[in-house]
Structure formats: structure tokens, C-alpha cells
Length: 507
View 1 (cartoon, rainbow, N blue to C red):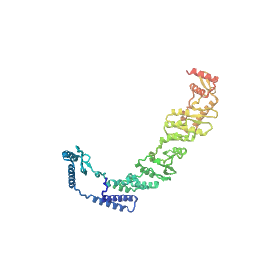
View 2: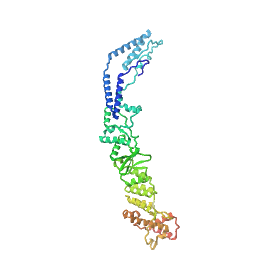
View 3: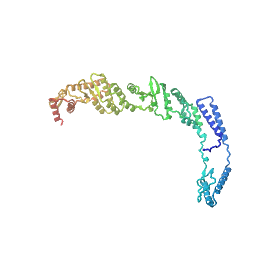
View 4: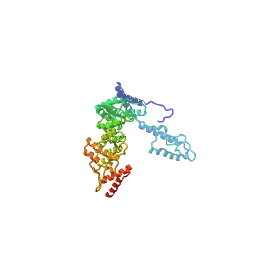
């Protein structure tokens, strides 16, 4: 309310005691939360004071008739004073204006404390009274007062938001936990004290706060940290995940890391660059992460209830690993083949496209082990035709000073040679040079060695390498042309004769 200068100020006793009572009650609530010995005294004094103030403030005296009558008399006196200030020859006209200015507004908008000018004069021929008539006094303007009882329940919340007070940082408050069982709430309280150094508001006090309609500032989880690893049980992990649920907090593992060491699980704050992954019961996947992504990918305990809360798992994890696989490291490729053995064909193809080729020599046991791994993975394909095509392009034999030789280049010649026309046969040495023949023999020997290892069914290897089939004239001619084009061979008379006969016979 806007006051006049020099207006007398008066202390509102009821408002003073009402506010003091509210403050004492709020202090009593804080005492309850912190379990001070004077908690009952504050609550009793504050509530008693509020009761007395409410009782006294309910007694009021209202004199409705006297107020209305005095207002009418005041209005009538001011009306006559305005009329006397007008010259006689204008009185009739002015009276008519006064009637419209004073009487008509009362039918639509009540006028309180209206002020009228004294000794008003008008220029000759004018009687405009609108600037001075019907003007509301500025002292009557006031702002609506919100009762204290409407603000009391939220006063701690509002004061904390405004920064006037600061809720104790070691106190943790979450009203939705009131629905937990007594055992779960006790475990949450102990966990927050042990892990984060936070004292959780006792469960019984949450009901007390709600009964009084008092709203305390809710504690956030974004600033919770665990500096040193702390051992944690399966039951405690479940309860901790449950405690974060009211926050709709999907990034629990963006803030904390779980890992297993020996038989014990541990939890700590996440470090920069770390990613929590879920490998489940796959020991090979965990071994791969530990060996080739140590310090970056941290495998969680193999607990089913953790899986929904960890983003990096299953296909997402496989995609991450395959994109970053060191294909030059045979051990990493071997482990990945074991991981993908029971996965879908598209996932396996995606991995093999990253590998690009398998180089095998007759002296390296490591390269032979790698070849076994790839062959085993290809044997697990649902579509064996696709697997066979992939092996033909992937498997390469390299020898010092020799050119690369793929499985698709292998020529399976009959012992007595291939007969193009009756009485006209060609043997391997007639069509190919020594290095090509040497690589061809090495690839056939590799197939036989894989079969002798007996690590998968023989028929699967035979099917992948097509080692049970001999090439006919058409197949030999096709591979001969590939050989000439790729190796830049100087054609001899035997090769010319073979090419001409094939063109004639194979039309």
C-alpha cells in the first residue's frame, strides 16, 4: 500500500506473533531432522503460539451500516459544495452533469474515498468537471496480501531457491523413498552414508513433514562422488539402482563404474575416457576388452539386473569392438572370431570385411592358427555359399619373391592332365610357371593340414575349400586366363595351342 507522507505507522501485533510462531515451528522441524534434544520444545511452543494467534484473530467487529451511512453523508456534502461553486446561470447545466458524474458511476463501479476539488471555477460558457469529479484517491490503492499460512509449507524450499538459506549439504532428502520398505530404506540410508557421506532424512520424519505440508528442498544426485573403490554386494547394488529411480536418472553408469575383482564387486566414480560395458557371461568378450581396451572399457559384474541400465552391450558393444579391431594383430582377430561364433551372419560378414585378407605361409604357426580361426568362423555361417565365397577372397598365400595367391586361383588338375580334344592333353606345367604351381600345391597342402587338425567336421572344410572336385576344361581355361592377365605372362607355344583349342571346343 502506498502511504501518505507523515502517516502514522502502527505495529501489527497479530502478524508479529503469527510469523514468530511459524519461524519457531520451522526451527522445530529442522531440529527434528537433525535430531536435536530441543526438538519437542520448539514444536510445542511454536504450535501453541499459532493456536493462540488463530484464536485471537478470529474475533472481529464489523459495523456495516454506519460505514455505509457515513459514506453517503460525505458524498452528499461534497455534492453540495461542488454545486455552490458554480455561477447561478450555469447551475442547472452543472447540476445535470453532476448527477451523471456522481450517480451513474455508482450503478456500475462502486466509488470509495472519492476526492472532490474545492472552489472550482470554469471559464465563461464552459462547465467541464470531468478532471476533478469521480477521481479515486491514491491512498486507496493496495496490493493483495497472501496469507502467511499459504506460504509456510514451502518457505524452506523458497528460501533455499533464493539463496537466503542453505539446506545442510550432508543431509539427503528424497520424499519418494517414503514408499520403500523399512529394510530397503535402512539399507539406502546406510549406503548413502558409506558411499557418499550423506545422512538420509529418517523415514519416520518424511511422514511428519507431509502431515504438516512442509516441503523441503529435494537433494540432487549429480554431485555424488565415490573417490575410492568401495566393495558392494549384489543386494546393495539392487537397492542403490532402486534409490536412483525417482530421478528418472538413466545415466547412472555415466557417473559411476562397477567392476569385479576376484569374487568381490566394487563401485567408484567414473574417470575421464572410461566406458561401462556389459559383457554378461561371455568370458571371451571380457578378456578381449581387458586385453585390447584396458583402461577404456570396464566390464561390469555379470548380473542380469544391471543390463537394462548399461548402454554399451550386445550389438552396440560388438560394433564398437569391430570398428576398432587391430587387424594386424592375429591374436585380436582370433579372439574376435570366438566372440562372433554364435552371432548372426551379417555381423560376421561385417567383421570379415574389416579383416580383408588372411595371409598364410608354410613356416608360420601363428598364421596357421589365424587361418583355423577364420575357417571355424566361416563354418558357423548359416549360409555356407556365402561363407565359401568369402573364404575364396580372403585366404592368400605369400612366399618370399612370389606373388600373392588366393584360394580362388587354385587349379585342381587331374593327375594325367586335362583333355581338351581327343588325344590332346595338357598338364599343369604346360600352362603355368613354377611359382604359380608351388603356390597351388601349398594351398592344397593347407587344406589337408586343416582337415588333419580335426577341429571341426571334415565335410565342412571340404565344402569350404571345394577340395572334393576336379576342374574341367572350362574351369581350367577360366583360371588360365586370370593367371595370364594378373601375372603378365609371356605366352609360349603350348599355351597358345591350349587357348586356341579351348576357344574352338567351348563355343
